[in-house]
Image 1: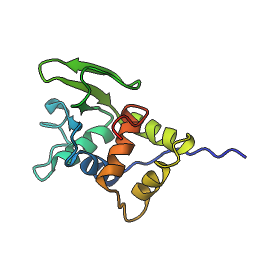
Image 2: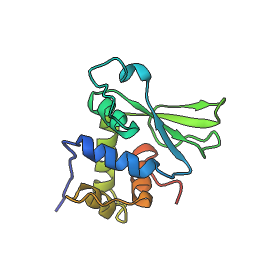
Image 3: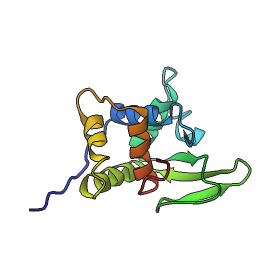
Image 4: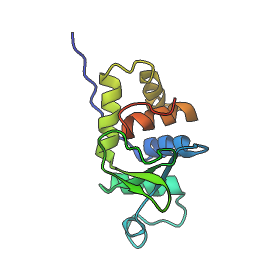
Length: 148
């Protein structure tokens, strides 16, 4: 028997939970966005935190930047990326489709220890801790876990 998971309907709150939890206190992970993708658009809201902005941009079909501050110039995975020498950081371009594909790879692949993290994230309580969120993000961005 073969079972395949398809990821659909990622919500604003799902994205905020993952991105907030993964980036808060992370030594390697950071995110940003093009100011013109948010400010002066219908997405802009004075009450939004940075994670709200990231989620809105992703849900609007645009991309955010994901930064690997520990890459030392080494790129991983297949996402578009560029080395930012002035900041000594690798910048990856991340879309909602990339997040969906990454979650599907986790759930359909052989990374069994990460699957419960995804299921926890998807549960009603969304009780995801920072280590779990970082592991999910590494599989989304890099296709594997680089920083154990």
